[in-house]
Length: 220
Image 1 (cartoon, rainbow, N blue to C red):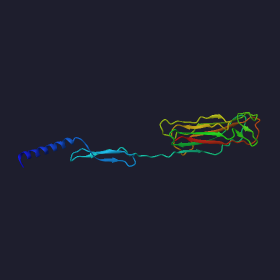
Image 2 (cartoon, rainbow, N blue to C red):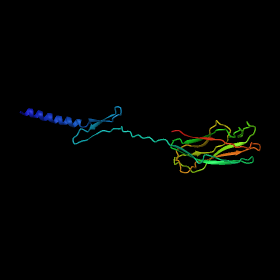
Image 3 (spheres, helix red, strand yellow):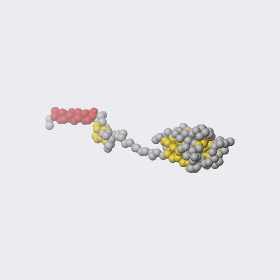
Image 4 (spheres, one colour):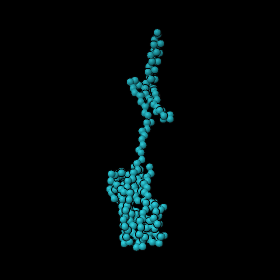
């Protein structure tokens, strides 16, 4: 091999290494990262073009999912409020307590309707503040908070401030509301529901009753 040929080979080798060194400044894709079921999510895995060297790629595509089942509970301390004998000079009252628990983000509400629109007798006489039967008496529902808050949610509020004469079978009276989730406590003590009645001196002597239809609701 003559001198010129050796010189040419040497120069070619130097040029090749120079070219390799120049290309090593740019990363080369050596693979791909994919996520099954992602609908085509593909990420390049790149090598830094040197040995020893490294290759890496980042896949931003694993989603961790879960659900929390809705909870809505209501408990009432008794199924009967017995007012006993009513009189015309003062109200006779009786109460039950109620408990509500929910994990609904906007809380819950409790409403009630009167089946009879008053306390009704078998013969059709009714105790309420209307005079359809010729006699105006009084039949009231009231609610008050009766226990400590069962919620640790920031900004939690609960309201129980009903005070109304009951004379409708259509109206849904609001007994209790909350604005955040709250636990169902062991004690039935979120609020107290009280029924009160006062009669007139000429209210017919017989037995009267009403049925309170209570509904609890929450939006999840």
